[in-house]
Length: 640
Ligand code: ADP
Image (cartoon, rainbow, N blue to C red; front, side):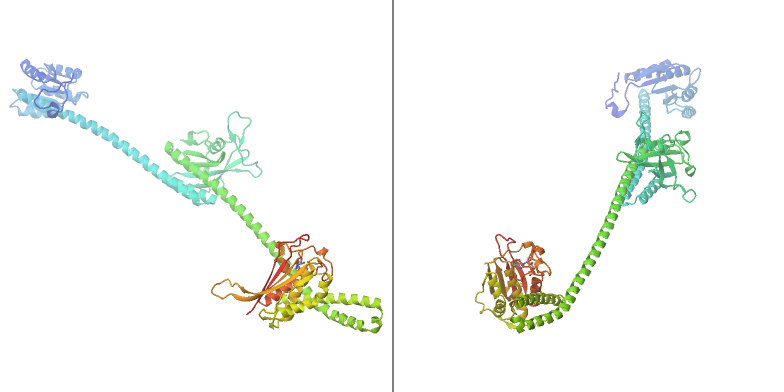
C-alpha cells in the first residue's frame, strides 16, 4: 500500500520519495533498534532488523532494502566487514549504507566512508536527525537512479539518432545520385554515352567496386531479340534462345589494366551466372557473398568481386538487360541500397527506351531527308529539262518564223502577180484555184507574223512607236477589217459613241492588233447570230496607296454572247499556246465558229497591253455552249 509521509509540508515536495521504502537496521543493541524502528515506522517506512552482521547480510539479500543503517561495533563480523561484504555483492552494492557510530570516533567515520558508506549518524541519536538523513539518502539514491535511467535512455536515443542520421545521409546521397542519373537520362539521348555516364555516376557516388550495364543482344544468326517461353518447363521461366548479354558500359575497374569491353555472358537455357539468371527470370538477385553462391561465375577481369547485386532492366514486358553492381567486400548491400538501386535501374530502362526511340526517329528523319533530297534533285532535273524544252520551243519559233517569212513573202508576191495575169483572169477555174492559194498564203503569213510578234514580246524587242491617238481611231480600223467576217457569221457589233474619250499615248498598229485579236476571238467563240459589244469609259485606276492620286485610265470592254470561259482557265488563256477547249476540235478557218488558231492571240494581246503599262483580264460566268453565258475582255490603258 502506498502512503505518503505525514508531515506538515506535502511529502513529495519535501522528500520526493514514494513510500513504502524499506529500511534495514543492523544493530546488536535492542534499545537502539526499538527507538529508531518505532520512529521510522510512524513515518510509514517498512523496517527490517538484524542483530548481527551476518544476519544483516542475509536480510539484505532477501528483503532488498532501499537503505541500510549499520552499527559499527557488533559481535561477530563488525560493521565495516559487513559493509565490505555488502559492497562486494553485485545485487547489494547499490544500496546506500549509513554507519551508526560513537560521536568521538573520527577514525571510524573515515574508515566507514572508505568502506563505501554514504553517511554516518552519531550515537546517541536524535530521531529527527536519523529521519532526515535517511530521507536525504533515499532521495539521492532515487535521483541517482532516475538520472541513470535517463542517461541510459538518452544514450539509446543518441545512438538511435546517430543511426537515423547515418541512414538519412546515405539516403540523401542516394537520392541525389538518383536525381543526377535522372537528369543525365533526360539530357543525354545517345545510348552509349548515357550508359557510360550513368554507371560512372553510380560507381563514384556509392563507391562500389564495379558498376556495369549488360544488354541482351541476339547473335548474328540468332532469332528475334524476344523472350521465348520455355515449353519443356512447367514454371514461368523465360530464356533467350541463342542470345547473350554484352557488357555495354562499365565503371570502377582499372580500364587500362583490364579492358572489360567485349565481356559476354551466354543466356542460353541452362546458362549459369547471376546475370543469365536475372535476364531469364526478370527477378533481382543479391549475392551477399559470391564465394558461397553457386550461381556466381567468376570473371578474371572483375576478380575483386565479393558481393554482387544484379537488377533487371525492362522496357514494358521485355527484359533488355541488367544493372550489375559489385562490391569488394561481403554483405555490402542493405535492403535500402537494393531499393534505391532498383529505382536507378528503372530510370536507366526508361533512358534506354528513350534513346532507342530517339535513334529510331533519327533514322526516320535521315530517311526522310534523303527522300526529300532525292525528290528535290528529281524536280530540279525535271525543271531543267522543261527549261531546256521551253528554250528549244522558243528557238524553234524564232528560227521557223524568220525562215518562213522570206519565202512566204516571195510566194505572196508571186501569187498577187499571177492574179493580175490576163490568162488567169479569164480562166474562172484557175482564178478560183489561185484565190485558194492566196487565202492559204495569207493565213500562213498571218501566223508567221503572229509568231514573230510573240518572239518580239518574249525577247522584249517589241518596237513601240507611241503617239497620241484615240480608242475611236483604233476600233474604227479594226472594224473595217472584220466587216466580211461579221457578215459571214451574221453577227452584230455594237459600238457606242467613242469620240468624247480622252486621247491616249499608244502605238496605233499594236493597239489595232490587240482589239483585232479580241474581236476576232469574240467572233470565233460566238455562235452565228450573236452580238459583240465594244464599250469604253474613262475610269480612275486605284493605286493601292491613298497617298498617291488614283491614276486615270481608259477601260475598253469587248463583250460577246458566246460560249464563255471556265473561270479555271481565266489566267492560263493569256499564256502562249494555251487553248481552253479541245485542240482537235478546232477547225482551221480564222473566223469559223470555234475555229481555233495556234493559241497565240491572247498572249500577244497581253504582251502589247503590258508594254503600254496597262492590264487585261477576262470575266465570264463559265463555259457553256448551250446557254452561251458570254465573255467580257477588259483592257485598261493608262492615260498619263
Ligand atoms: P486561239 O488561237 O486558240 O484563239 P487565243 O490565245 O486567242 O488562242 O485564245 C486562247 C483560248 O482562249 C482559246 O483557245 C479559247 O478557248 C479561249 N477564248 C479566247 N477568247 C474567247 C472568247 N471570246 N470566248 C470564249 N473563249 C475564248
